Length: 140
Image (cartoon, rainbow, N blue to C red):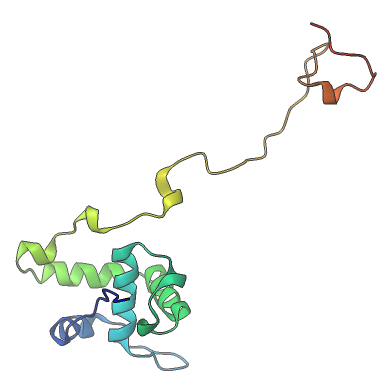
């Protein structure tokens, strides 16, 4: 099966390099081109992080880099720097049709939620026969 993998070109990486974080603590970062290409692939295709092709390296690395850089605002700064640099509109514009949402992101009910039944009004009928404790059949 042939996969359609996304790879940043060397020219694109040269534009990105000045904007990448340079203060590495602990273990040095793995290949930025491979990891960023993997992140872009996941975001463009809408697949789960766990389903990212192995060619991009460990899936956990992709997710962790994306999440950590998002928390620190690196992605926003990179985007703003590249957008400020200008370029042909096709390279600057964001097309929302290229961004896929998870199937549960449609705003549906989202599963069961616990709701308290609240206090019953005095003398109110039980809503089901299971709640009767006197053994009598429900009336009506």
